[in-house]
Length: 242
Image (cartoon, rainbow, N blue to C red; front, side, top):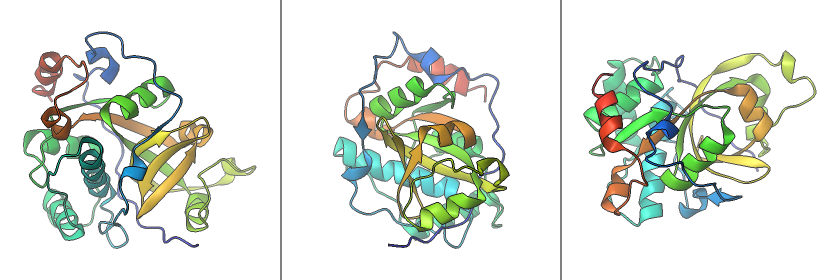
């Protein structure tokens, strides 16, 4: 089965200097993550959310996280439609298809909300700290991530193949920045949502092409009765300075 690759629209990462790595906000050290986590299979269908026509991947990724959190927590918060996703994207860009910075999307999500959904907080996760990435996916349901996409990744996606390093990977030009939510992992792959489906990502490919990752504390988790041991007062105080 061939898949249709969409567009890019993640601009260069920006990391507020006042924010510490997410694990630093844990009241006690986060527990050792399990060998595998899979939140992606909770959702039967992943919409493209306009990412075939617009570079709105930063917004589509956020919408997919809300979709997944609802399935994880059994909450019934509204999930934005593809039309809603595009409209919110164009509102944040001022009406132009320019792409967005993930940190700006997160700031809006936490302060003003997206589609009526407000994030409790967010903080960066070191892309090379694989344990922290696994802990965040396991305990908080997702990682809001950013990658630089090499040319052959679109072919791999279209052929239903995992994103993995090939012998000539050093010669592959970068096509653009892309935002994806990470919703699971096992020994071989990370499982992300992009362009209307689940995409497998080999761990060495992730370590090569990722350039940002964020933990997002979901309103849905608060409604379900947990924010999993994070010092919300400290995180909120830092976010007020962003």
